[in-house]
Image 1 (cartoon, rainbow, N blue to C red):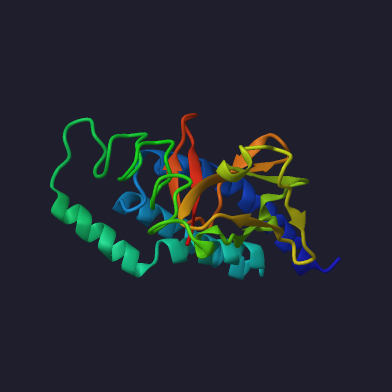
Image 2 (cartoon, rainbow, N blue to C red):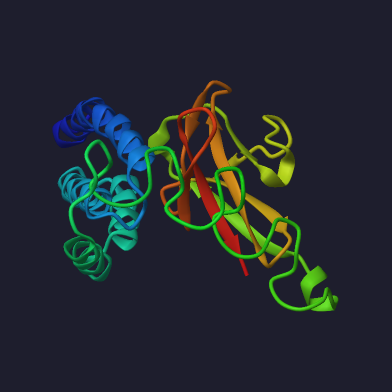
Length: 223
């Protein structure tokens, strides 16, 4: 085997092991800081920068793609707005997070368990139901192969969090994918179940909200 290829494979294994604690920390940050908080946006920028750098060094498209998605979520405009919001918010009360709501609560809007944004669950976005409101929107859920899974299932509000109803298929490009027809005008919580026992959030979700189990759910907004 080419020595360079061997070194890159070793580098990927070492990076996966080194990044795992950062992924766990990211879950904690997502739990205690709302998505617009400077602390959370800054951490996402750090992870994205790290993935982009390592992805280039190891010539790994999956790592680069993950870094790009993190940077898209926490780009310079988002960072500038987050720091500006925090600068004008004033000092938090003792024992409270630096900004945003109490730990475990969504950033704003409905209480945990309700959609992150938009109308009430099951209601059309605007006005009475009509032909357009009843037309489903096909959403493609994608997860990079860097998760190193043997099986991936999509679980969410749209399939009663079933571990068997919506399996993803592994494509020739190394990405896991599944297409789901969803009702427009609302948002849905979801997560990926890896190998039937490990939960993974989407890296390209429209948002993230705390769940009742001490973790965080991904959110997709269907318009």
